[in-house]
Length: 63
Image 1 (spheres, helix red, strand yellow):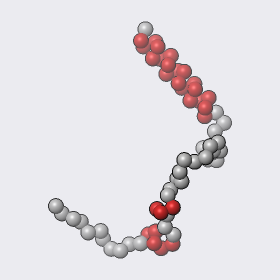
Image 2: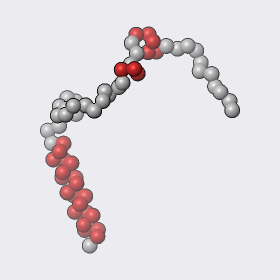
Image 3: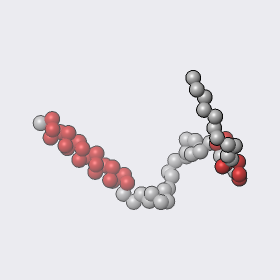
Image 4: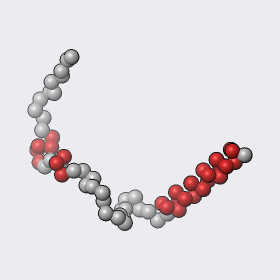
């Protein structure tokens, strides 16, 4: 009986997921609410050559 209930729950969850995703365009999502925060904080975004600055090898610290 427990297995039957688990299979029914799995089936209901799967149908609900497909119903929620019906018509959703992953390449052009439409956000229906305001974003909680920026996807990437402005402090982490660098422009120009600074983004790929290579100052040489990173020193390895041994304990």
